[in-house]
Image 1: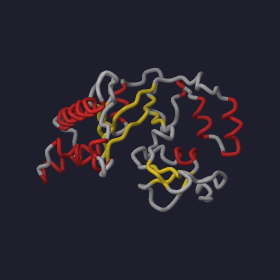
Image 2: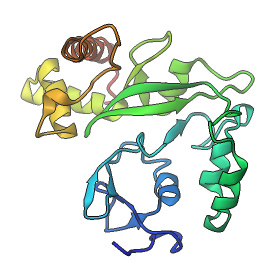
Image 3: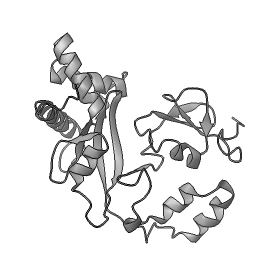
Image 4: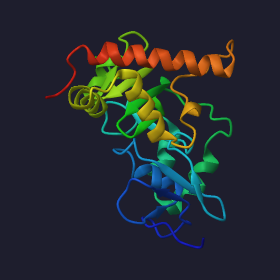
Length: 231
């Protein structure tokens, strides 16, 4: 493509966001840094001929809780130094890090998060500072309603709960149909292929997808029945 990163003007621009206004392109580091507060945007990556669908998760994005998008100081991740460093220092710092990622500390989980524009999977790093709240409270403070208070694996944004409330009140949309709509927002060409849960190795792919979809349906009804709308 031959276009430089819009932010640093040093590295080639390989990432494009379909949800951001304008036609900006970023290198990987600038692209991830610019989406610290925009984790539910759709990312495309340049493959040498055109932009193809990707995701923030595939590009290595980690959603840090409790420190304005930065890594928890108790669980300092040396790769964060690379993402926040200047472009000129990138190669030098990468060489200093272990190739296998050893030395990277911190408690991380991969969560399924439903937002108004689709279903996302995100790697979450929890805050581990002294006196930090439970995981479901950390999610709540970031506008995410956890489907469980013990080892949360699914969350719904306040925004998607408001949308579900509006659809149910005005359009009489059933929870199952609403989830199907979110899957179409994620991949309209093949909504059934959208994973709405984490694949269990002991189950076939079809059984796992159907089971996880039913789980998300029950979780949506459970969460929405608790009066979670901000209205």
